[in-house]
Amino acid sequence: MTTPPTALLQADGLVRRYRIAAAAGRPAHHQTVLDGVSIDVQPGETVGIVGESGSGKSTLARLLLGLDRPDAGRVTLDGHAIGSLDRKAIARLMQPVFQDPYGSLNPSFTVDRLLALPLTLRARATGERLDIAHETARLLDQVGLPQRVHGVYPHALSGGQRQRVAIARALAMRPRLLVCDEPTSALDVSVQAQILNLLQDLQRDLGVALLLISHNLGVIGHMATRLYVLQIGRIAESGRTAEVLDAPRHPYTRRLLDAVLEAPGAH
Image (cartoon, rainbow, N blue to C red; front, side, top):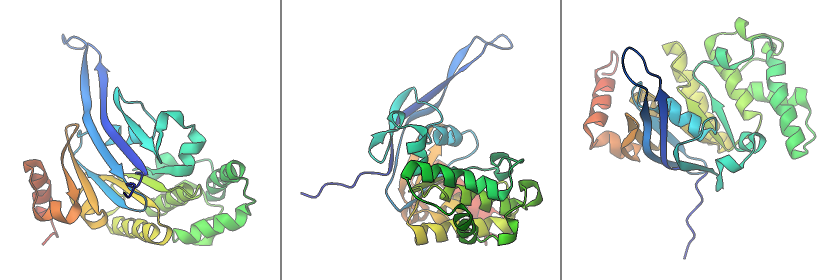
């Protein structure tokens, strides 16, 4: 009997509640942001999570990255409970790419230094003997940036260039999974497709898995082989992307799809 493959990332029954302080005559209470959410990402695949603002996407991302703890349920990374792994072990397996590249990059560091830090950490963790300058140049080339940005500070880069630096920094650890939380929503429309195409190329060339979190079903439909539709903290629908988009079963999914079809330039 064939043993089923171990999911690279798996979440089972995640629940997250936040305490809301008393205000304007209302007593303190707890608000459930996630209610029994289960997802998985297999090695090398691209999975999408789509939902409107307030659906719980960012909270889910924090739990999956180990930046927050669930009130119930568990997250496993490469078969290990994420709470049992130290930050270095998590970083070697999984790296985030956040919505705001400027906010995620230290403005006092040049591009060289931004990339040298994770490369140095990788060398210490694995025992590799790395030529940091060579690896930095290779990473810049990998994400389509010219070598002249080596000594440049983030403020002197465009939004798209900053996101490419953020992606390069994530790749420096050679992770098996990139968790991309709204990676293009802060960028100009003309640049969004370039970043999405870059992520697709990296997934194909490196075999890295992608978990793509977005409010935009069009983005998810373009990228993901499987998707989960998140509505107010619960999975409304999931399945192969083509099947869900061709025949959505849940009214919420149909509403998200209608919004894509009715968007300017969709026809």
